[in-house]
Image (cartoon, rainbow, N blue to C red; front, side):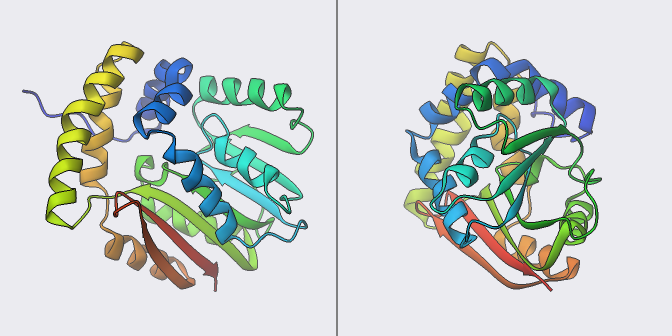
Length: 239
C-alpha cells in the first residue's frame, strides 16, 4: 500500500478539508461516538471563562469549538474563528446563523502561522484537533503568544497515540483500519481519512509539544490525557 501523503502545505490541507466539509461534522460525531463534544466542553472549562474574554479559535473548521466557547456558562464575550478552508467556514457560518450566534462569533479566513489579528488582541485561544495540520507548529505557537494578552490562557485538543499496550493496540487497529474505511465510504474522499491517522502518528509527542510551547514563551503548561490517552488537552498561560 502507498503511504498516506502527510505534506501540510496550506493549499493542500485547505483543499482536503474543503472536499470533506459536507460530511465533516457527521463523521466527527460518528467516529468518536459523540465523545468529541465532551472533549470540547472540557477544553472550554479549562479556560475558566468569566464572561469578559475575547476568545480566538484557531483552525476553527466548522466552528464547533467556537460555538462551545460562546455557549459556555459563563460564555466568552466574543469569539473569532480563523481557518484557511473556505468551505468549512461557510458551513460554520450557516451553523452560527441557525443558532443566532453570528453577532458574537466572527469567522475569518486565515493561517494559524500568520494570524490576522493584532498583538495582545485576545484573552484566550483554543484549537480543536488542528495544530497537527499546521505546516510550521513552532511558528503557530509563536503567533498564539503574540496575539494573546499578558496572562492569556491557551487550550489545545489534539489526538495522540496511547501508551498503555492494550489500549494502544485497539486504538491503532481502529484508527488505522476502521476509521479510514468508514471515512472514505461516507465522505467519498480517499486521501483525507488516510491522512488523519498518519498525521497523528507524525505529530509531536505530548512531551515534545510541551517543549515547543515552552520555547514559544508559554508557562504553567500542562498536558492532560483524556479518554485513555487518545486525546490530550494542553493548557498554558502567556508568559
